[in-house]
Length: 258
Length: 258
Image 1 (cartoon, rainbow over the protein chains, first blue to last red):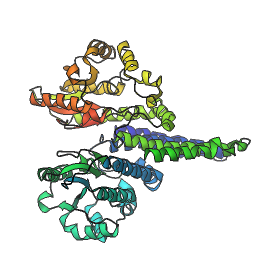
Image 2 (cartoon, rainbow over the protein chains, first blue to last red; image 1 turned 120 degrees about the horizontal axis):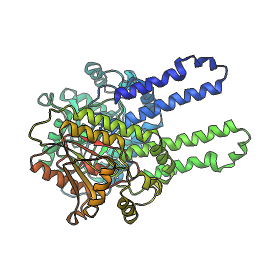
Image 3 (cartoon, each protein chain N blue to C red; image 1 turned 180 degrees about the horizontal axis):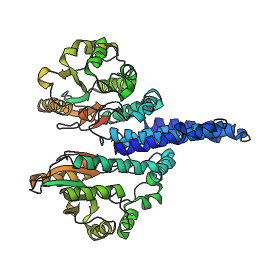
Image 4 (cartoon, rainbow over the protein chains, first blue to last red; image 1 turned 30 degrees about the horizontal axis):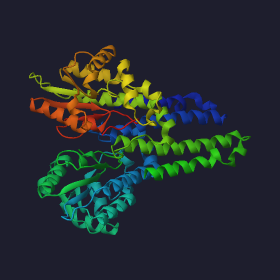
């Protein structure tokens, strides 16, 4: 299907952009309409691709379709991404308030970190927003700067669930080596007083995120915690076993983690 | 958030459509641009709503936002829905071919029926495509006609998984009373030789679809079946317990079943 879409999208470009339709340039309105048609078709195909990615139908995938590079960047830099982030935060807040929090302090909310609490958009904007294959060593250098900004709607949700009395557990695929800088980055971005910060130890290094995170959730359940909510931008934050009673999928059209 | 979006969307309409901007009518290009801006904003908000619905962030919801009625209808009647249906079918076929099917005939694929194998779009087009609250008795009358057409990309997937040697189990929230007409409808639409058709008995009537379908999947697992794939348009087809190794979420922006 990916090949089919790429073929379709590619087959649209020559229609107006690369063909001898350019002799229509003196008639700007017609030319504009044709450009708009090309853009509408790219939008249509890239929206369809994005839906498939966000609903976990595409898994696994390594990079975004190169034809969708502009679409994805426009989405991330435009209102679409902000709207989606705000909506998932609002829906999660609505759900979070629906519980009577028990006095036993066993009601918890799990947050992933990257693209959930902290945004690596400054890094990805310099690396093609998903067009480039993920580069661990480059990304690690960015992480080690500790400059990732907060995702504002997630910070609101974080504060809300804290205020409501949930315990907050942060569960991230970041390595234990990055604990110090992660704590510093989170604090500087406005996140305080979490109850646990679980990073990936050497033993967990070769596990998929789905397995690593499921095992950690399973430990929580065995310790008597009730996982009421779980916020993550990857399905590997949310699926597997010992799943949360309710999961909230934040948008991320840039990369896929198994 | 829903209220926020409705407010936002509503606040856009007066900008050009209902205000005294109508005195710009003699300058059609400017008026068109404003209409386009309104439409772009409705698209933006309704796309965001659709993402939230399709990623299960909205659950539960009863009807689509009335402002998105046109957007949802355009999506269903335009290329978007077809593209999304084709993509999920192709991705599922790709995954299905990745297994060596065992000779023990225990590899199975589960399909939901409504909006997965059969389309009720002719019914929903006459009932607002999600704007109207679901009406069991009206919908039952439509089901009893047995005229729901096949979703063509799903029929292709159905045939592919049959050819590959999977057993095909149909698991539907339709009631056991509708077995006869459902069999007739499926056959007339081109679906043949399924291995099981499981409908909702009287005992299952008051269960959520998530529980009913999880229990039925659990029985399959206990009978030794390996649930390799599961195709459904509702998260209640896919989530719960005894989940499939891989799930495929078909698009459905019209209704939500818990």
